[in-house]
Picture 1 (cartoon, rainbow, N blue to C red):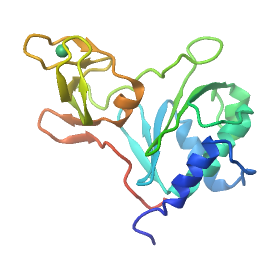
Picture 2 (cartoon, helix red, strand yellow; picture 1 turned 60 degrees about the vertical axis):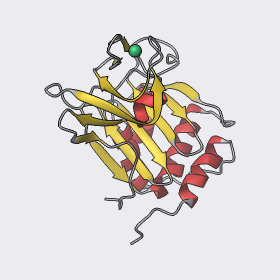
Picture 3 (cartoon, protein in one colour; picture 1 turned 90 degrees about the vertical axis):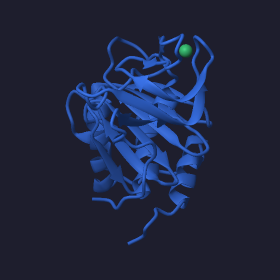
Picture 4 (cartoon, rainbow, N blue to C red; picture 1 turned 135 degrees about the vertical axis):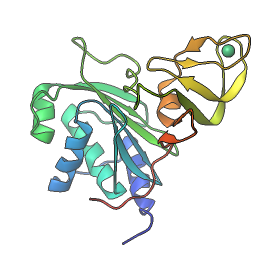
Length: 217
Ligand SMILES: [Zn+2]
């Protein structure tokens, strides 16, 4: 078994989001992965390091990247979208979600955010008629008991005081600036929030920052 997923699968994911797609090959494995994505509300990260689906409340399941291209093709085909490399947001109705997964109550707003090193896929239950808003609402945080901190690979400037930091306290709706004269909260961009590593106040990792290669199970 490979220690790392072949990077070819991530290259294929990028090609698909550029519109260089072929027919999806339906398989039981893809349905299995789609069912994970449609389990309530999820954030999915696909990168050369792997493919991981995160659930509301903090659970996460890694998959082999081999499943990612066909999973994306199935979503795009169902939405009848031919992508051209841009970020996408669209709505799938109950019957679309059911056709993909066999799960009832599967209407979802879907966001696909392509990037050179990571592709984000977010699914949320629609809270109104029509297309999704520009960004998905944040997934519920893993723990209500502990103070959580978002650790960033790239430092981010507080929009209030411009102090740059790679650590912010994370609440459900916002991040809080640790600047001594600031302490104000703000809502970080979806991509920044999705790629942050969450640690509790003891430094224990609650949610890892990037997908790691794992074997399909
Ligand atoms: Zn600040």
